[in-house]
Image (cartoon, rainbow, N blue to C red; front, top):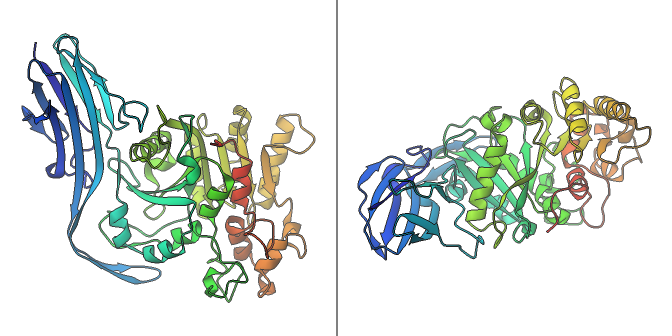
Length: 467
């Protein structure tokens, strides 16, 4: 009986998976087979009798024409010629067994099992048919971003060892652009449960496709750490205190926090178009995180040599108007989210009941809240409600609401806050300054190692995996 094999993949002919550049091959004993049927997202083969070994090789490329235009705020001219890049590769060997009617995937040491992007949907049936699905929900678009995005070269120059940033493209979901911040702690983990922390930022510029001018100044601000006070090379916007009027430019040090926390957690940044986070703010979020982690594992950016890597502990976080998507994401995934970090987010008051319900329903939940200009009292109300509903009179170990009052921004209370204002004491009561401190701030003043930021503290107190 002739063995029939159908190789399929989702989202065929999306802009990031053009079928004409999909190179999907099946080889029998080293000889390429000609597909019997070809359609977008599908190749069908008949396997010659007597075949003992098969090799599936898949390569997906994207070709974009010239891109010219201005990336806004700050304005930077982008002028790039046509280019083509491979965005996904996978190879899997099979043994043909049971008299030529079944396939058995050959384990690969890198994954302690079959390739993560090659999934046998059906091993065989009465008609000796096998279905193989290629997992193409996400692809790697980093090479395109490096030339389409203003400020990338600056980011690369300022980036420090300890983490790596990759840019992923969602082929069938929105937003279409995602960033993955990967600390070195994710490289080798014996446990296959991969932790993930999703960050919802405030509104973004409007974009519709990968191949257009992009601006990553705001992303670089979130990721990079400030330069310390004694660094003579620091420009005004690079310092760890307000120099001039740049209260909203101080870097937030996300990468430094990830690296220093020693937690094996991938931080995902869905890149909204305007305020639209698409599926990232809804019930699709766990599946989207799983797809991103699957690609990172397949490309050996995380969990090298580990078997059966899948989404483990899931955290969500947000800042400012990013709360407009953070809280819907919590509502839609109330039984799946494990940790929530809220940095002076909008919508906190109207979501308070959901926040308390979520926390009380998850025995290992972690809730961390930082108030700036708008949420100090609201966070304390949530804190007290959780105390009351759990019959706790003392401090809550797994809930943080800081500061406890607006006095937390008074002089000589928080040394780092005082340091930030050392040249601009007039901004101490300015609501926007306090609002921004919620995302870049922390506790320990310089000189010395960079401050213990709120994010770093929360990561250290998390249940995200320690490799």
